[in-house]
Image (cartoon, rainbow, N blue to C red; front, side, top):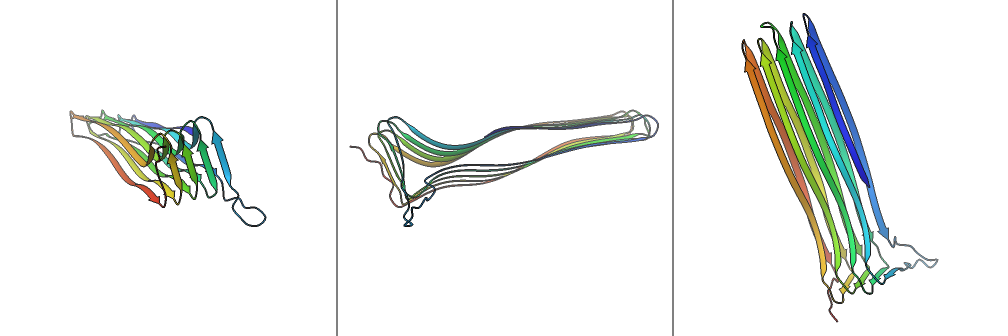
Length: 278
């Protein structure tokens, strides 16, 4: 599953002799569920679990993956040549990603001359550019520009092999992974002969669980290695620019980025898991 989301909110407010108010609100909600299952506990007439068997002379790959590109660009510009000009932009993205790869009871997977990969993965790339420009040219005028970007992301990535047998000549890889890259630019500028206020705010909240489970299963590599892992990678780059100039009364400019990340990364092996060389 691959997705791209662009959220752009922009407004401009201009006041010549009176008052001006402008606003833009953009909200996007994304809910993805990607599931790959082998041997979903099928039963015959007697109630016994039916064996699901996959055999290949080369490699076997069982995978579920969710990729997303997110772009949030709230821009706000106001000008007051008279009394007051106020502008606000709000861009909000809420994402939920549930990615699972399950090899269930009764599954027999054999790569006679190759390797086996059982993986689940989620990747998110976020570009967030928040810009506020506020200008008051009249000594009695007031201009305010406030853009706000909000991202709330929840991820669950799970790879599970339970009551199954995996046999390969080469490497066996069982893994769950999450990869997040965040690039944020927060820019605020205010110029005033009167009063000017510019404030750019970005808030990002990430919650994720990444888990790999091998339960009561036999994992055999004849000539290679066995890898069982859970991986969570993060890269965050933030650029802040704030400028304020006043030839009269007050010019205030501020940039505020907030990033909250909560991650739970687990690998669990219960029962038989082996690497045999013959």
